[in-house]
Length: 640
Image (cartoon, rainbow, N blue to C red; front, side, top):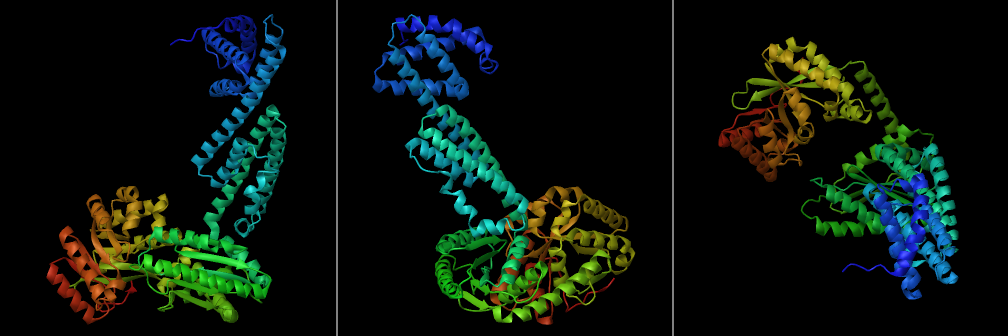
């Protein structure tokens, strides 16, 4: 049913419409919300309707109507300062009119309108900020602004909302480590942080005094400052995620030098199938359980969890260590029952290092850390948690680290100068033992391949290495042709991101085709999946490398086989080497059966003796598949 306009509403409309319309049209900002004179008239009618109702209702209902008035203007996106000035203008118009309305009533109505409009606009500003922050997944900022929402809704007159979450975080060890060596970012953050604190305190002051006009202005500045502050925090997090191991090593270097009874702890969960959910769950459980420790920092990096805590008090440090060990054991017991099928032991490998008396640099610290990890990874124990204190062996660790770094430097020099040698290892027909292909390998003097490959990865030389290898292959095609018409070659997955490398692969592939040769690139199924577009552009033959190593997904492989020219499985050598174990024999048979069903060729790696060869030959006969073998039983790698 349509509402009938009251006499008071007509009278107010006739008074305010001409003057109020002119007031809006003369204001460049307010006029942008008006598309026509009809719309302007409707706005004036709405104003008149609100004011008439407010001037008639009793005090109990006045607030409700005022909220409707404020929400109407907020939804029109009219800024509060303009609304505030408009209310002042309307108040003067009605006061100076001939309307028979009590002066005190007019004053009260407009006072309520200004107060409630201020509160509504403040809530709207906070809610819009929360929505924006949630979209950005900026949880810290969300928590901070959310405190203001609680404050406004409940009107808790606190001394400072600011101190609820930010100050505690800034003073924490986590912030200290994440910003280590980033003084420029820290200074920017401190400036923004001080602005937020200043504006939040001002806002509280104005809000308490019901100075909503000033409160809205200050709140706007505070929200802008908080966005700046948290965008800097986001930059800090981005740098941390990109360089966390290096940053942590720099921090650790300083701590170890100062000998403050600090502890660097590695927790290496031994899981035979790396499950992302497992690692994330473990990480968050540890964080939750270790909250009771002061001055502690924990972070997840790849498949390892790092924990650091320190105290200047040696006795307190030892007590903390006992409590820490018990906490980790409790968590291990929970995970033993929850993940029994995928866990191997020890589940956690924890290394302790308390301090150095020697002058060391960052690279040496990282290398010491790596040596500790390597030693821990070799441990075999039935205990769920293995703990080793490396402090007494610090000098020996340091010597090993320096020697390892010197070898690494020589390797890097060799790689940069292309002073490595191409080798070839035969891939033979498993039935006739005739050479059917070779795998191209690289050698750097007498240095084991696993060592220099790790050095290449750590020093970000993977692309340079692949470019050098493929260039050498390009000029060695005649020599390769003398051995075989088919060659396998490994690459680092990240090299596929380089257009220069992609073009070089095309060149090698073109020359191979001209010489009636087959080039097969060895890639893991995951690498193929991530680089389908590039591989389609290259149109090279692919062998799935390390098949069965724990990452294998038959459904995914099936799709990739039909999508790409990928018809070869190279079964992981560690599986073949352990063929005498029933579980490994089952894996090999399962993969061989799959190869038969999908009409795939199979290469068995690490065939090191006649026992392995005979067992593989029987499997090949059983499944009647096209299969090859590679390993020291047939040949060692030789120079091309």
